[in-house]
Image 1 (cartoon, helix red, strand yellow):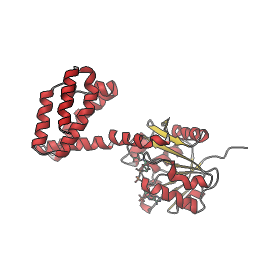
Image 2: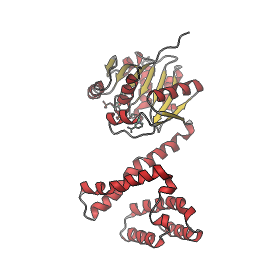
Image 3: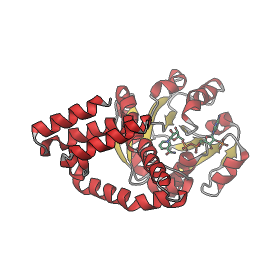
Image 4: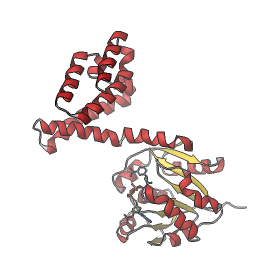
Amino acid sequence: MAKRADRFVIIGAGRVGTAVAHLLEKGGETVAAVASRSDESLQKAQRYVKAGLFTLDVVKAAKSGNVILITTPDDLIEDTCLALSSGGALKKGDRVIHMSGALGLDVLSSAEELGAKTACVHPLQTFADVKGAIKRLPGSVFAVTARDEEMSRWADDLVRKLGGEPVPLAEEHKVLYHIGAVVACNLLVALEHAAELAYQEIGMEESKALKALMPLIEGTVENLKRLGTSGALTGPVARGDIGVLRRHLEFLEREERKNLLRVYVALSLYALDLAEANLSRTRSEEMERLLRKYL
Ligand SMILES: NC(=O)c1ccc[n+]([C@@H]2O[C@H](COP(=O)([O-])OP(=O)(O)OC[C@H]3O[C@@H](n4cnc5c(N)ncnc54)[C@H](OP(=O)(O)O)[C@@H]3O)[C@@H](O)[C@H]2O)c1
C-alpha cells in the first residue's frame, strides 16, 4: 500500500511554528493549515507561509492534515492536544508533535489514546523572532524523543528536512537536558545582566554598559568554540590568584550583595572544577575552602 503523504498542520503561529511552516514549504512539503489564537498572529504568518487554510479554529485546521505540530506556549500544549482529541480532529495513524524542550510525551497522551503517533522535536536554539528562527533552525541540533523506532526515524527525517541535526533524547532525561539549555542560554543572559548592572553602577550609561562588555563576551564564545570549556577558562580561579578571589568575596559580603555573592561563589566552584588540572593540589584546596566559607 502506498504511504500517505505528509500534510502538515501548524497549531500556534508564533516564532517557531511560523518558521517551521516556512521551512517545510521551502523544502517542498505541504502545509495544509495554520491555526492560531489571534488574527494578528495569523496575518503575520501569512507573510511567511502559503498554506491552504489560516484559521482560529484548531479542530478544523487539524482535520485538514495528518501531521499536527503543536507550537503553542508550553503550558497550552496539553490542553490544545486535548481539544484536538475531543473535537474529533485526530485519527489513528496521524502524527502529533510538540517542540518543547521542557515537556515529555505525556502531554500528548490524549492523541496516543486515539492511535496517533507522537514525538517531541526540540531545537536546541534560541529564537527571538520569526526571521531569526528561519535563519537559525537550519544548522541547529534537535533533540528527538519518540515512543518507537518508526516514529524516531520519521522525526529524524523531519529534522533533516528543516536543515537540522537530530540527536536522540530519552524521555527520562528531558528535565536535565532542558536545565542544561536554560543554563547555557537564559542564565547566561541573566549573568550578563548582572555584569551590565555592575558597570552601570560605576557610571557607564545604560546603553554603553553591555556594548563595553560585548567584545569580552564574543571573545569568550570564540575561545569556547576553539578550546572547549577548560581551555577557555581564564581569570583569578584559573590562575590560582587567591588574593584577588578573597578581595572579591570580601567586597561582595561587606556590601551585602547577597545574590551576586551567591552566584559568584557557586560559579567559581564550577570554575575551580575546570581549573584543578592546572593548579597545585594545595592551591585548589585552599581556594575551595575559601569559597565554601561564603556558601
Ligand atoms: N522561542 C524559542 O527560543 C524556542 C526554542 C526552542 C523551542 N521552542 C518551543 O517552541 C514552541 C513555541 O514557542 P514560540 O517561542 O514559537 O512561542 P510564541 O512565539 O509565543 O508562539 C506561540 C503561538 O501560539 C499561539 N497560541 C497561543 N495559544 C493558542 C491556542 N490555544 N491555540 C492556538 N494557538 C495558540 C500564539 O498565538 P497569539 O500570538 O495569537 O497569542 C502564538 O502565536 C514552545 O513549545 C517552545 O518551548 C521555542
